[in-house]
Image (cartoon, rainbow, N blue to C red; front, side, top):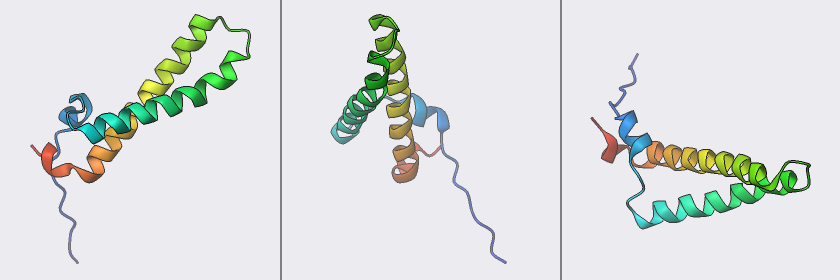
Length: 83
């Protein structure tokens, strides 16, 4: 039975490196805008103050969009992030 070989990937580098390539920046900006709209729409009609609504939906949008960029890096750019 053949065992699967795992590659050593620098997790800190994948998570903490800002997007350098233009298509990574575009993906980050588009997902940030879309997720902000998705999270802000239900909150704007509630009784939460506008600043709190912006803060809550902004934090959720940033974490979701950054997670998407990290997932795409780990799937498609493993060669750049090897130890």
